[in-house]
Length: 203
Image 1 (cartoon, helix red, strand yellow):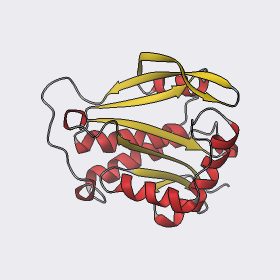
Image 2 (cartoon, one colour; image 1 turned 120 degrees about the horizontal axis):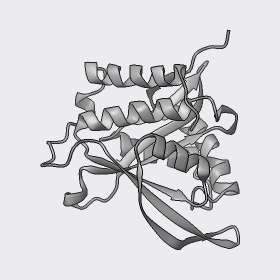
Image 3 (cartoon, helix red, strand yellow; image 1 turned 90 degrees about the horizontal axis):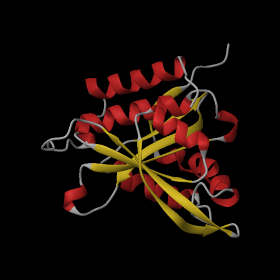
C-alpha cells in the first residue's frame, strides 16, 4: 500500500523542492507571470516572509514534497489587512489526487482562525481546472482584467475570485501564526485537510 499523503508547515529545507515544482510553471506556462524561475535561495526568502505571519503548507508523501499552498497579504495598506491572496501549486505527477483540496481546506481553516475575513485568487485565463477548484471552495468571480500580462508571445487576461471567510461585520483582531501552531485549532485544520485528501473530490 502506498504511503499516505501528509500535510505540514513548510520548512527552510523544503525550498529546493518547492523551487523545482514552481520552475516549469514559470518557464513553460502562463499560470504564473514570472518569466525566470526563482532559485531555492529566493524561494527560501519568500517562505520566510510569508511564515512570519501566515501559513505556508506543503503536502508530502514518503518525505517528498508534492505540492504547496500559502496565503500572503493582498495589500500592505492598513485597511486591507484582513484580506489575503492565496496561491497553490502541485507537481505535475501529483495532480488529480485530491492534494489541492487538502491543502486549501487546511489553509483556509487556519487563516480563518487567525481572524482573516476574505481571500482573493488571481487566475490567468483560460484555466478551467483552477476555476473549478476555487469555485468548489466557495470563491465567486469578482472581475477580469483584459490583456493584463504579456508572456510567451501573447496577451493574457486575469480573472479574480473572492471567498468570504466569515460573515460581514467588524473584523476581529488578527492572531499571530506563532500563537496558533501546534494548538488545537492548528491540529483541527491539518486533520480536516488530511480528511479531504482521504476522500477527494475532483476539482
